[in-house]
Length: 352
Image (cartoon, rainbow, N blue to C red):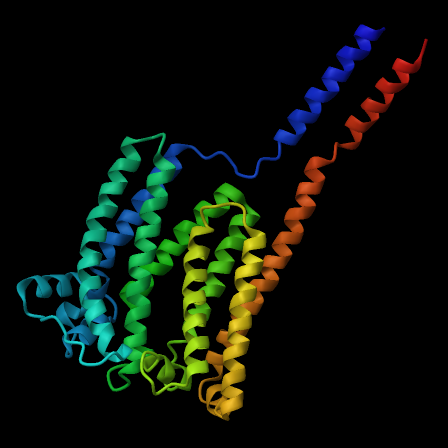
């Protein structure tokens, strides 16, 4: 009888282990899936050079100071820079409007290097099956970051140079590459982690709207951001705006990285709470200076993105954390059938 009870106890224990292991945090994905996704990243990187032939681009005109080169395609800008037709811009002041052309000039060379590295990563993804996920992720991060930086920097410079730019002249080539890369990354995250992957993608999208608050034209926020390195902006405003910019950019980078890493809901709550507190502090400074009317009325969407984006991300992070705790609790508790078997085993052991 004791041997039978011991065997049944071992069976119950094995069943409990199997059921706890049947709820993995990530779904196993085979290498061919990552090979396809890495190839898509490589195609997006390469086609991004030619998107300007088919859609409107503004970065070429902003760098060259005139009409877009080869219809504003990045390929044309790279060729013209290599030929020396576009000289290195000079930064006459420490204002963003003077520094951004220099930054974009070197980002074009970074884009050329990124395309070559991306194609090399496609080959490595297909050649190294065991490391396919690593190379695919590296390819995605590289594509998303380089085109994303070009998009944000181009829009910011265009907003500062109001005579060259309007919201109808977004740099569509870089924006298209960013959106396509985001869609591929979202597919990877959802395939691996289901609803958690979808939440990570949603947080990244919301965090991207926070960046939009700084690049709306005709806002006091944009004017102060342009002069943040000078003494024309008050000390309190400069500190809070600089801190908010750093937190927003850091959160954007972390949101991209969170597409790859499954856990971190508690970290999401903390980082978006810090961003929301910084946004509230900067808004309070504008209220104290009496310029809140211009800040909220000239471009109300900027204020909405500045305040509501981190708040929405904070609420989503809190919901995800609650769901995560509930899932962990259900996973750690033995199922009802297993508890019944344990009770039956205990009763049999008490029998003479």
